[in-house]
Every structure is written in C-alpha cells, then in structure tokens.
Length: 492
Ligand SMILES: Nc1ncnc2c1ncn2[C@@H]1O[C@H](COP(=O)(O)OP(=O)(O)OP(=O)(O)O)[C@@H](O)[C@H]1O
Ligand SMILES: [Mg+2]
Image 1 (tube, rainbow, N blue to C red):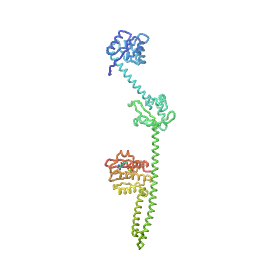
Image 2: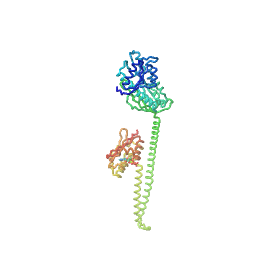
Image 3: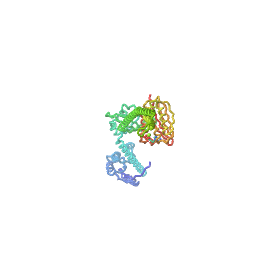
Image 4: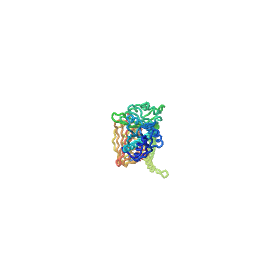
C-alpha cells in the first residue's frame, strides 16, 4: 500500500497515565499533534465532539460507566472519526466485540514506535479512501436519482430489480418500490402489441446478438401509451455466471409522434406529387391532341385552299395585273405560303410529339426510347448506343410514361451538364425488376452536387421512381462519366 503521510491530530483515551504519556510523545515524535489525553469514555465522546480530532486512539478497557468499545461506536458512527484500539492481553471475545464498532486498527501494549506509525498511517489512509468512495457514491446516487430518464439495474437470474430511480414514477406511473416488489415489471407493462417483439429483442440482447438499443411501447399505470427507448449493458459475463443488466429508459413518445407526422406528411406529399404528375400528363395528352388534330387539320385545309387557288391561277391563260401585283407574282407568293404552311405543320407535329410522343402509346416504351435517342443524336451530336430487351410486355401505361419522363430528363442533363460524347442505354428485366441504365462518358456528377442540389430535375426523377415503388441511383466518377440507374418492380 502506498501511504502518503498526512499530519493528523490524535486524541488519546487511556486510563494508565504513563502509557498515555508514552503514546502521546510517540505520536508527536512521528510528526503528528496530540488533541490531549482523557481517561474515560464519556470525556472521550465529549472532547471528540469539541476538538474534532482526525483519529482517536482508544483503550478497550476503561474505568467508568462507558467502556472503550461503546465510546468508539459513538465517536465513529455519529462523529465520523476513525478509532484505533489500544489493546493489552485482551481475550478473543472482547476483540470480536470491537469489530462491531468498525475498528481502523489495533496497537498493542506495550507500544512500539513503528507499530504506532504504521497503524496510524493505514487507519488514516483507509479513512480517506472510504470518504472519497462515499462521496463518489453519493454523487453517483444524486445523479441517477435526479436523472430525467429511468435508470434500472436488474438481475437476469430472477429478473428482480436491484435499483430503480425516481424517474420510473414519471415515466411509467409505477413507484420504485413497486418495481422492487414485482420482478420484471417492465415486461409486464409492455403494450400487448409489442410483447412479442420486446421478448425477441430481449433474448437477442442477452445473447449479444442485437444492438444495446431498442424501442417499444408501454402502457403506463394510468393506461396511457408511451414509447420508450432502452439502452442496456450486460454486467459480469462469464460462462455460467449469473449476470446483471443496467439500463437507461428514455421516454421518446414526442419524438415518435413527430416521426409519424413526418412520415404521414411525406406520404401525403408523395400522393399529391403523383396526382399532379398524372394531371400534367393528361393535360399534355389533351393539348398535344388539340394542337395535332385541330391546328393540323385547319392548316391542311388552308394548304388545300392555297393550292386550289394556285391551280386556278395557272389555268387562266391571260396574265393580268391588279394594282402593282402581277399574276406570276401571286403564283410565287402562293407557293411560298404553301411552303410556310408545310413548315408550320412540321413544327406543330414536333411540338405535339414532344408534349406527348404518341409513339409511346402506339409502339411502346422501347421504341419511344429509340426514337428519342435518334432525335437527341441529331440535335446534340452525342452518340447513343442501346442494349434494349423487349420488356414492353411487363410495363403498364403509368410506368411507361414515368420511365419515359425520367429518361428524357436524364438525356437533357447529359446534354446540359456532362460534356459527354456518347451515351449507353440498357433496359432489361432481372428477378422481377425492370432496370433502365443510362451511362454517359462525360465529366461525372459529384456526390455533393447530387446530394445538395436544390434543382428539381433529379429530385423529380427520384420522386417518380419512388411513386413506381422503385428507386433511382446516381453514381458519378470524375472524368469517367455518370450512371443513372432506375429499378422498379414488375407488376404481377
Ligand atoms: N450527366 C451529368 N453529368 C454531370 N453533372 C450532372 C449530370 N446530370 C446532372 N448533373 C449535375 O447535377 C445538377 C442537378 O441536376 P438537376 O437535373 O437536378 O438540375 P438542373 O439540370 O441543373 O436543373 P433542372 O431543374 O432544370 O433540371 C446539375 O446542375 C449538374 O451540376
Ligand atoms: Mg436537369
């Protein structure tokens, strides 16, 4: 034991004057102070109270009503002062009795300097260590008792509770004493719908196969439902050893409520997005049809009128002049108007097709992708390569238009951002999933851009994939390009 010298003040209780003096001078010679000498138990208690010595050296047998053991008990228990006994040829029984009064050591008469020195030092050392331990225990107890979370220590042999703090009452409605008298009370108050899950997690936890952290619902004493998060540790694990569990249980009902609210509002938002997209597609179909059919037909009629007029003009043999316009000028103008109308018809067809490619409805998604690629290649000079399986039979109208829109947006991004020279498109089915991959050989999107981008393109693509019950992943490699992969389940 490494003892650090601490100067102390000792009270000597000894009714043999010479021995008392001898002990006092030894104590002083060892560098300590004497608080005085007394010869009976009552004075020992009184002076201990008054002078507050660090240590009392107490003769066991004292004359008077109070013997040494009795005095030592009072001094130690009520004044918290350590007592060392001075013993002569005491019998076993008396020595045994001293043990009840928490002895800090024994000095035997006749006293010896070295003996006194080591007994004083070890008594003081023990007293200091015990005091620190007590303070630490008190601090720990204060902390756990005042914690807002429920803290428990439970035996895993009979599931009785060794400790339950005050917060148990606030969280569960049950007093700590109710936990002490009802082993495994927590399991008993787990919500009926959670009992099975709780027991499963608990067993896994004991076998160290599940995280120390799990959540479950309880019914409070009042019948109210609460969500708890339990974090636990196992103690004393050795093969065959009975062990113990310490756990902290936090009431997470509020957090759970927010989580459910957020989840619900996400679902609502998704449903709304889905609805808006459907409406948008329907609108596009209508506008596209109106433009194509109505405008297209009117323009065709106009074209016919013009060509009839041109033919009539060509048939008449005389040439004439109206104002400053000759009939040949008129023929040229009519020809130009005809060409302009052809151009207009083409433009209208293009706009209508871009709004809603009827190829998608007539020939399916695979053909539509090919057609879009051809247009894309013409417009951007970025080469497109395909590996497309005939998967149209697995795709319904909603999946078809959504995948097409994702594909369109991906190619727009390639043209706008990638700097690529070529794009590879694969489309196939695998294990009840449809997979569409678009890979460009451009600069490669970075993870940060993809994660932090507030623009709506990629976000909308991901949302569309989620609405189809699938997912969209984007991977970029600097200088090597970007891969967009859409996976959706095949509807049965
Ligand atoms: N193929 C690609 N190669 C490199 N970077 C890309 C590629 N596709 C997208 N990005 C990057 O990701 C960002 C986000 O793309 P997103 O489509 O969401 O938005 P945007 O195209 O900028 O705007 P919009 O909302 O009009 O689509 C782009 O601004 C671009 O920096
Ligand atoms: Mg975009």
